[in-house]
Image (cartoon, rainbow, N blue to C red):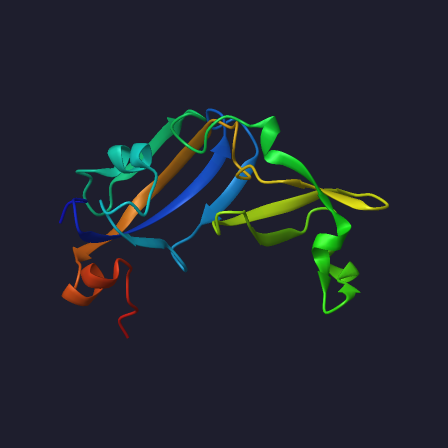
Length: 164
């Protein structure tokens, strides 16, 4: 069975920066493969373009430019937030204010964003709202390990259900 629209696809892969020469950023093994409904927007469009039409057992390797992946790094997505933003019930939540912590936030329009604390200062916190892989060319090397028909329920909900 081939990788195509509305099929449940499981893949394993190693993700590296650049053309396979860079640092390993993520490893997805057969013990816990990435399993998604293909072709409904769960993956980056350029990622799907490289998987479409492959058979179970086929290997893949390709590079996505930062533009095809998570975009260029945007300096304007690094903002300074007053420490009082992290006051809950009159108490500053100091245990969450440390470099590297990812914190779910919400913008003025109610959109959910995740920011990573890059520094904590006396009265403010500097947060980076760029995707962690922004500005990077990404090299994927892996294998298609399973392809099956999606169930009507999976298609209705837009995600894969566990089949035990």
